[in-house]
Image 1: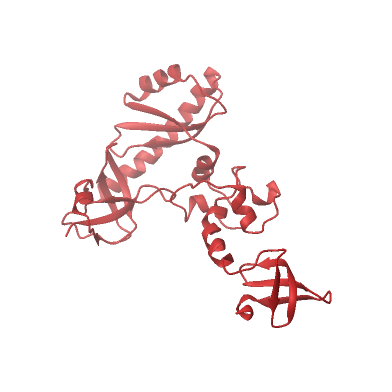
Image 2 (image 1 turned 45 degrees about the vertical axis):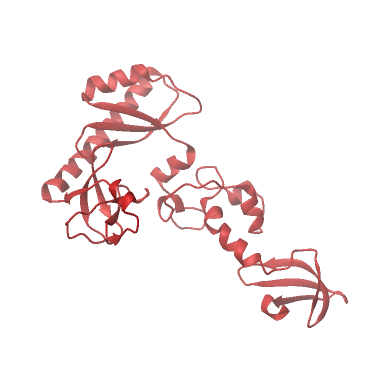
Amino acid sequence: MAKAIGVKFKREGKIYYFDPGDLPLKKGMAVICQTDQGIVFGYTVTDIKELEDDQSAEELKPVLRIANEDDMNTLEENQELERQAQEFCKERVKSRGLPMKVVATEYLFDRSKIIFYFTAENRVDFRELVKDLVQKYRTRIELRQIGARHETRILKGLGICGREVCCATLLQNLDRVSVKMAKEQNMALNPEKISGLCGRLMCCLAFEYETYQELKKNMPKCGKIITTPFGQGKVIRQDVLKEEIALEMENGEIKTIKIRELA
């Protein structure tokens, strides 16, 4: 049966699957992989697993080798080159008066391409900037415009919860987030309370949305009149995580009960 192993190229990036071949790989190892973009350095984030679909196995690119000392030295050199390239690009952007902000720079492991990530309010004509970069580095150049959420994912930071932002840690994809998700979680629709460092709705709203939906399935909605072992009452508040509701009883008393007590 065909096998695959999960690899990440960036801590905050997606997991990509590769053919491990006969290499003795396990989770947490530095590896060199072949991709459509070129040769890339990454870390295994899963153990080798068997694939049920042989067809999908044919589409997997190979893990070329376990990273050696020379590869680690090349990685360090590339990181320094990225820093220098980013500073040069920022200088050229400022010199040409371009309305864009250079956020990050990525050298492919084999140095066959440099990717510059930037943000901008509108489309930018950066043709002359590309000429400057090609003349300087004599390799393929790509300028990739990203949004505010992607920028925060790269730059990182602490959210209002005091932890490092979800987009840079536990989330693989930046899924769509909507105000409906905040409403479902009974959150005050105050932009300052439900927005992340990027100024957009917090990623954790999407991450926790399905859990709230599942927990609320058996909870009566606010405003509904229900019969309980203590008499009839109107639901005035839900506490989803505690799985309890607050009721205004017929005598005006406010009573809090667990959902399991309604069974």
